[in-house]
Image (tube, rainbow, N blue to C red; front, side):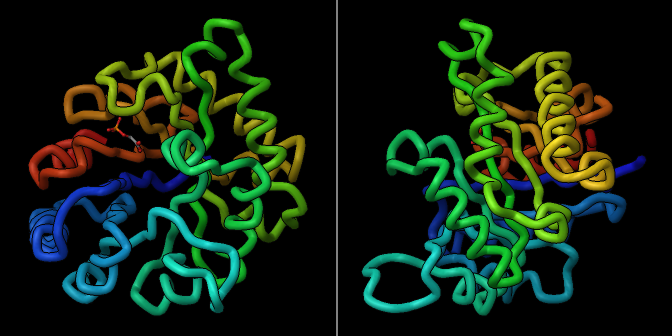
Length: 250
Ligand code: PGA
């Protein structure tokens, strides 16, 4: 089954509003491919202006997180309906930096995934093992428990809407990339788990992005692998040249 590739840029805590609009516009103007999905995830304050600047272009916009309550006395939080109204169609959930620095747990990932789906946003759910876990041969077990917790209670229809990102923690921002085999094997394990937990159709159709030091030079090899359906790019998504280089290589 052929799955449409996605190249997604996670800008993390980078770029002013003006810089964000300029970067998104440069990517949109120089985008030559229409056979894959391209997405950018600016900071919350830049989502609306970026989405406005991209109106009429195929580029998609995502939030980097969301809170699970729609509104109320939750100072500093952002909800699914607000992201959607600002122009986002997707939202990244459970990034390892959220897990590491902001006490994200499988339970809170699960609450966010459910809230995103309710708001009509496509969740990009991140999973990945640490170096310690990989060296102790725990990779598959860690991925399975992150998936089981994060996707608890979801229906088949909900599962069919998900995008998963495999992001080995040891490869994020370190310059160390998982080998093509390591990535493909982890993606195959995630895909098989989705098949066991949901059904064969979800197993075949779910898109699994690889994240962790993806660059123009290593993108082609990774993205050509059977189970790798795209990339979630951090550092290299911060310049139009590198991000477009990854898109061209896909
Ligand atoms: P990186 O980040 O490309 O800078 O390694 C990837 C990510 O965290 O999504």
